[in-house]
Image 1 (cartoon, one colour):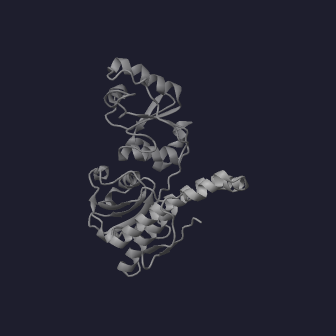
Image 2 (cartoon, rainbow, N blue to C red):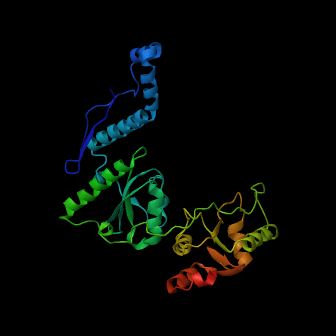
Image 3 (tube, rainbow, N blue to C red):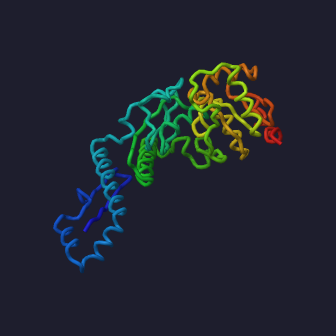
Length: 310
């Protein structure tokens, strides 16, 4: 009979694997008996229905064993992990993976500010750097590629409790109750793919060739934001803040990634000439240029942005 029982403790940081099956399959003799005996056909059918549950148990056992080994070696101890410099676009470091895991953010004085968990560590750390650059100096990360939600929560609790113990009972500033600065608190608009101005078959386009494509996108959509990256993952802090402002108003808007050289070749440079505006992002509404980052954010903060889209 297959089964897994995992016991965990936040105090001792230990895991006990009481029972697991190494292969995740029934022994061959039992399988042959089920196949040859008509009286066992219903049992075989039941076993087939439970295949997905068995696979989940097997994946769980792999994660458990890896976490147990890591805990025994001290490899998931926050204090033993290296600090990664995330200043000046250091958040793009290859040491920060796109996998699930837990992470800690420190300021430039190497004081812990926040402990988080994420399905994509790199995107979460980048978001914090865009929103709170003054608080983001260094990071520690623990990738957990096959972790479940419970695994991530357990790891997060261990790191938070370790800091509480070391600090004499204080939570990291960003994890204190009602602290909204570090939370992924932005209201999200509908998820949409970015607009593509071409079919991707022309790798180099002149201003004259790309201009009508830009105008077509502006004419056909009420709100268009030309940004660096996508709405889910902007590639600069200015684009991130403009997208968040539009999302916060729950507006239906389109984005065009000016860094997509396949489908929007040379757009980063052509766009500046098209609008006679030197920076990206740029937002168009009702077929007119509304403004860049500073204008959009200022209008948003004054409560004037939503009226501009009517």
